[in-house]
Image (tube, rainbow, N blue to C red):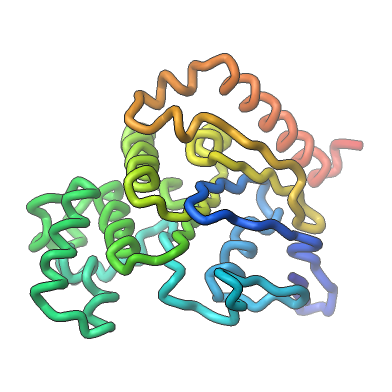
Amino acid sequence: MTFETPSGVQVHALKDVSFTLKKGELLSVLGPSGCGKTTLLNIIAGFLNPTGGSISLAEEEITGPGVERGMVFQQGALFEWLTVSKNVDFGLRMKKVPKDERAALVEKWLDIVGLQGFGDTPTYQLSGGMQQRVALARCLINDPDLILMDEPLGALDALTREKMQSLVLDIWNETGKTIMIITHSVEEALLLGERLFVMAPRPGRLFKEYELPFAKQGIGADLREIKQLKEFGEVREEILTMIWNMEEEIMGKGA
């Protein structure tokens, strides 16, 4: 993906990025600011068309947004003047799904994300963590093949973030959905990625790939205990050092 600045300079946001995401996989993507993480996600979502190469889902080339891909943003992008239920069933209403069927699905997903009894609550009255639960339910109720998450927990306090991380793992385990999550948090990337990509900038590229056990270990477990594992600490420090060195190079302090 190449962008052109107003002064005519070509910026290689992504170069030679190639990978296959397996059905049912949980992939986390990590890297310093400016490495193209969100650009990559937006290309997969169909919001951007790459300037070279192609991308496909189930052998169908992606050329724009589609219902088979669901997106969860850092800020819920909700209709705050609507109730929780009206937010969650928005996609179903657009598809003209019958009212009774919509209501049953809304109850199902509100139960799964822990918002039982909040269906008639105006969304603006909810906390940030609860709004992200609404955003998750709104995405999942449409039964997408692929769930894309762009820093979905970044604005939450530490305790709420940990609860939401557990919820993401539970949903992945229970639904078998394919999930790709972008994050700036090394710990979160380790917890929420059975596979993890570290990206490097200038140009944005896949720098290192990890196969990790922590996502499966974290299902139904105390995530704080997972973080205390010796192997978790070793991989965390390795990646932190890697990203620190990238940041130093970007700022002109490294080799």
